[in-house]
Length: 113
Length: 114
Image 1: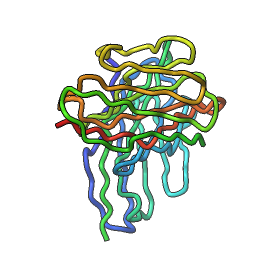
Image 2: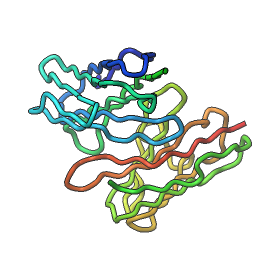
Image 3: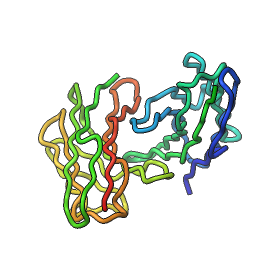
């Protein structure tokens, strides 16, 4: 069964600290992996998209890694800011007919001052 | 990035009534997608709306409950019919940006059914 599991479910860190969010998937055949940021009351916004051949991609203070062999991805946030408080959603796309995006439940990050 | 406008942004409705959510995109797109995000859950695809044809519904979702219109390449509506408290969710419209494969979402419509 295609699944995307994210950990931790929630996380609280101090402003300025770094953190890493995890995403494990069992989606097959794999096409790409996406990380989204969803602020409270807003729609998800894309941070990164990685294909099978990419193992790291950065977007400002956000760096995503992908290990297609172990089917794991991480999102590293550097020098966190209060505005990073949001839900971070890992989405994996499978190669199959029709729409095949499998969403994780997200990690809720709270950055405090 | 694609600009997607959704209306209403939020609403509180009575059980048994229906609500129509509108989605307007700033450019023409072939497919538009409707998602539901229940509290504490991941996004779930309701249906794919294609212009000029009937929407394609995912398992567990039916046209009588979630009728969809797609009158042109920039606009779609999703109706939540005969609502119950279990329909309380955020409903999101999304589109792909051609060439990049990037999926853009609207701001969502937060629906509360009493």
